[in-house]
Length: 129
Image (cartoon, rainbow, N blue to C red; front, side, top):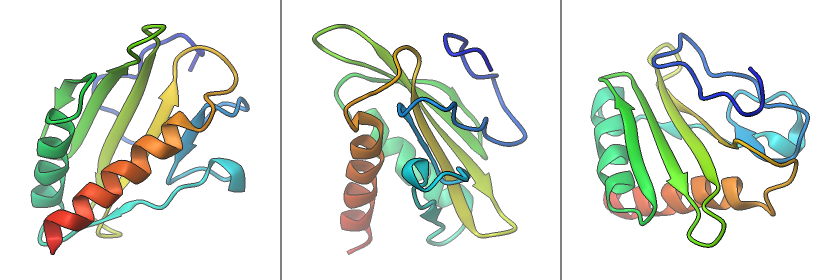
């Protein structure tokens, strides 16, 4: 996928991260870009719905595509108005939600995409308590 292109509407799998250090993915092969998927708690569809509700409460987030097995949200930075894409994809075979978060431009994101996913993970874990 070209660096400035938007992800497809509903992919069968998540796009691999580019060589640039502005992407994290649970399906990445590079250690520096790898991040854990979200475990399904209850059904994967219920887990995705809970994650969606958390994303809806996040400043700067806009859900663009949402189905029972896929979600894509755009995050716009407040200062420079850059757009990052967050994708969540149900992987029922592994009972996880695969995740990918990537900047559309630039080659380094100062760790913003990893922080975004880890913040979502912390908020999701608090919901389960």
